[in-house]
Length: 508
Image (cartoon, rainbow, N blue to C red):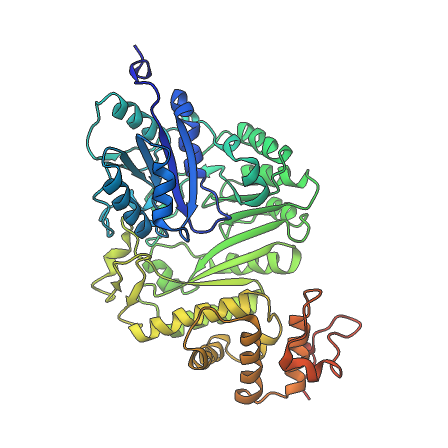
């Protein structure tokens, strides 16, 4: 007799997580739901965000009188999940809590999750169903269930379980493969033994259904979209056959763009493609130190191609605090990337994730990390705690000015033909001295401070600065002229007839 034939009636399963934003959705919960077989009719997906009240979340979950609550645990929600477990167990101790996700798939656990009844370590698509059957049959096993990787052929796809509201208002996450062939020591994906791919024909059929339902934003979570060029080309063909507007996001390998892929990428219109490119460091010695492949010539060649010959929106990543890297080395990385491309450059602080091999550098490189999520490095033998603090603020102000696009031309006046890093570093220290904060700074105040810095500290002509800032800030139709620029607005053209920014003119 099948296991499910023995199950008591009217059991209730809730699948939940706390997303980092309301606009995000959890593909993981939908995989679990898709593979619940006959238990689907007993299951419900309820998603929340980390900004929601934990007591309100507990109320909404327990209002359903669930027998089992499955919770996805990630670096951004693990502290809130710990509090949520505490509340649920206080109010409804008989409710079984099952945890899964990256934050519980490797030990040590650095947040108290003791109230959980079961923890699935690894891919839980099929394991969660089997555990629910065991729970309902009172034949459960150990608290921690370590899973080997299931065959993707045996996993039901989740895409039909995105709701109409998801498609209309939220990101749709998809994947063509799992795993990563590289062994970067700071990344959990390096723990996978190999890259596994879903059946592409079946997958494209599911994407077509999503498209027909109105989906126009597809965020691929594959670690290496362009590793398999045949697959990459077919995925790009899927979108090229569609009528814009649409948006497809991919994480790409920066040194692997053969001519066939370049030709396809060059066909996309503005705003259709976004590539996330994990550079992390351009220092070959540091890259070797953390087992990260770095083909510098190819990386530079491909970034230049994407910058100059395509409409792709690029998002490059750099990490502060890698073992052995200095601020000077990081600064050289930033200077080089800005010279290569005008795209977004995301500056992150190194995190020590449980299960990764980055811990082998702890003693030799003096690596000290926080045990509080997101487990960021606090200091190294080459970067002090004070410098890490300054770089966190540097990163935040970089996002607000450079990455935001609100000051696309005028922010470059901070460095002009000199070192980007050194000059922006000085600016970030100055602006923090004015704000004593990196948050809740209005656009008007930020612009006023940038104007003041350029005019008073950098001693650049105010009318020249105003011309650049007006062009930047008035790009958005209907935006009011900021008060501090009004006296310059009448005499300063926003752009000449060729659309040339004032920054491109030689300063008089």
